[in-house]
Image (cartoon, rainbow, N blue to C red; front, side, top):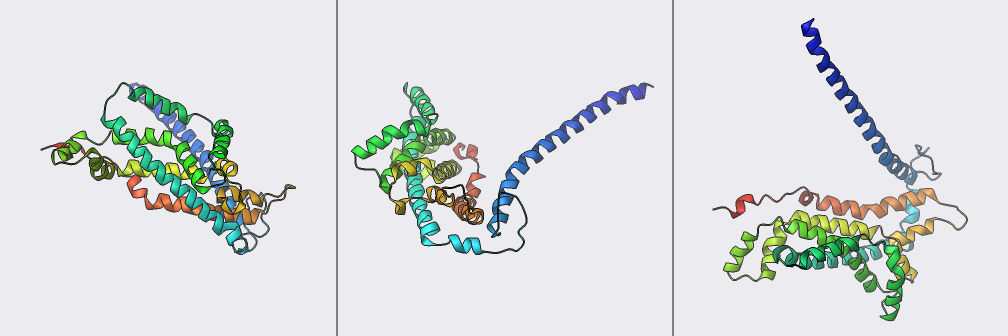
Length: 287
């Protein structure tokens, strides 16, 4: 009887753990299905000429939808515009974020905390709330309907959060490494380029991917600031697949969506190794 009374609580505890594990697994399966079903629809519909809103296996696999969208007007020119806008905006964002985060990370000041809190507040501003004054400003300075103006605004909109991220990653690089370089005659700018940024490669990769992805999927900004159809990026031209009377060519829309997602996936794959890296710098300042 004593052995039975000892085992009974442990069995109840094990049963509770099993129930919780099954409940967690069921929740994860539901979340996975919420992501897998739309992805399955996009892939299957891109190969089906009679695609609709249902997730179904096509009667016959065909590449006609890809042939229909792979034209300069529909795909190539908008994708090139997107690469120019998002690539230029990302480059400008990363450079400015690194230059802004360096003094915030390395030099102590009473203004650091208020400045960082101001940056954090700027990240919470909705883009729709500032587009009207931005549009009026761009008209005044003659930057409306220009690629460079849109690139500047892309960079400005992503810069607050990029500075916040870059500063946190930069704090993980020991300052002693820079001090050793300073004794050898290096300037702060040289130590930033040759020591800090190479050692915080994963942080730079995170900021780059985050900035590029946010710009790549932005519809509202280029829709407001660009007027010429030939300058529209793919995030805006995808709206052309939706007709005025509710008609949608689902197969071509799915094919275009897959092509539109490819650059982001390739960017992540190219720098995924750095994203998995760490700051193993503890031994670098010893000895």
